[in-house]
Image (cartoon, rainbow, N blue to C red; front, side, top):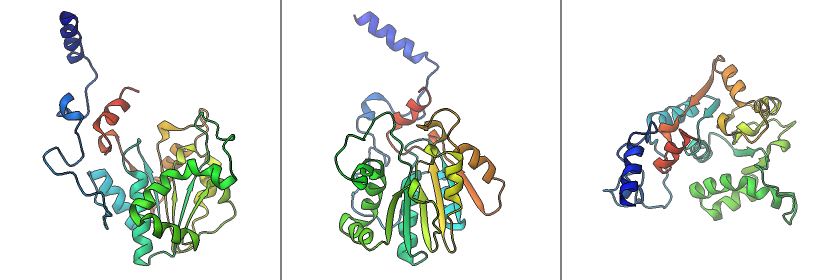
Length: 251
């Protein structure tokens, strides 16, 4: 058994698959955190300003500050949604906008939720949970409930955005890879005066049928339009566990 194990290890070393973070060995992986093992675990309390963890995140944050329309593309874990929502909260608190509008497509990723009890809002809760989590992290649950009750913050499925004009608002369209070309075009044309819109998504992780997602095509077309920024993040920018980035190179 010992000989087999040593052969297996040797074979793994000769493999063409390499981790994106070579310094991460097996023992350290269990205690890995983005600030390094020698630093104390950071306080999980509210941080007023979000700081970029890598150059591409900084480019994205700068693009949001200087453009009214930004498309953020990248794999899971690169901070696209969190940066967009944090920027929205900062804009709201600075008085740059009067409200925040967040939207997500209601796509069942192979799992039906029609059997769940409750009305439409309760059935939509699982889809919108990531947005609630990011807002709670930035505002706190009590303040978030107050802002949602008075309409300062609105979370709605993509289907409810048609026909609206969003003035004085910071709009975040999350998981845009699950929108068709026509849906994204409809969403983009909701942008009103004194507003900022950020679309986030990963074209490689769509839950739609092949060739139905319109995000990659829309991003390619918008890159040529002056005043619109398209930020592209990569596996190197993932701020979750390093194994997430390594897995995405082979999955």
